[in-house]
Image 1: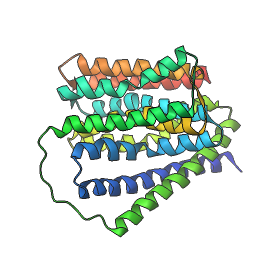
Image 2: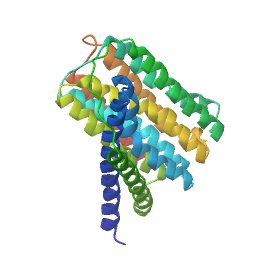
Image 3: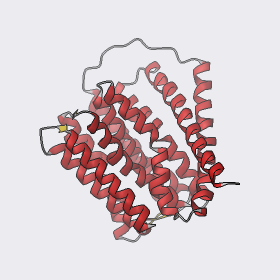
Image 4: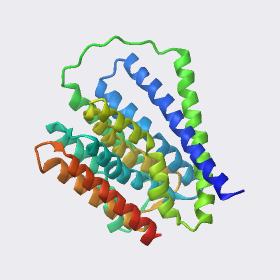
Length: 312
């Protein structure tokens, strides 16, 4: 099989995942509205989980097939991509005004799971299935606490749509496309990048992370263009928490993750997270400016260069 054909299959797998995620997110959001869930609960669960499903599918499949470091690299790399590439590009397109609650509550809370990786590295520990269960439970606790916090705000009454059998069928079709696209992407990525001499760590942390972060990229940039930056940033914050807790926890259920082998990725995620917090808190109050967006984007480019040219 030619290298070009393998590359086309990888891109095809990513395209199938993205289309499947689009179907799944759309119908899951409709389900949330039909059940009269608070809008923020739909956002931090449906939108964040939906756009992060490619990371979940690829990471779990990688763990099942005996590549937990590839899975963990994809998780950490996706969070770096979300902050550096996606938030950076979004702020570059136009200044993003953040609420005080987002700056003081949502952003710090989205970065808190990084502590799991830091302490895991310090203790030279391995994330086992038991710890994976704890991470998953921590994610549901995050959803519950955040939903309760936002439910205090007055909600606007909206007409509740009907969630039909056809909607459920389309939702299942989206899930099936995610699974099949994830399997295709993972299988041929391993073959292709091994052939050209790229390490498993770089494949997960840079290349797969970029591909599986496309839903967040599309959702976030669309939100900014449509003058709805709060939803755009909320999608990134929710996706990062979902990746760090639920996806990493799910990966650990199927294969132990040796955290001490992920030092470069952990360092870069810490630096990128710190830069994000500084950008949100400094400068003009609660505004991500174009210059700060450029700084985040430049930091992402530096990360990619170091991972591919030095770490690899």
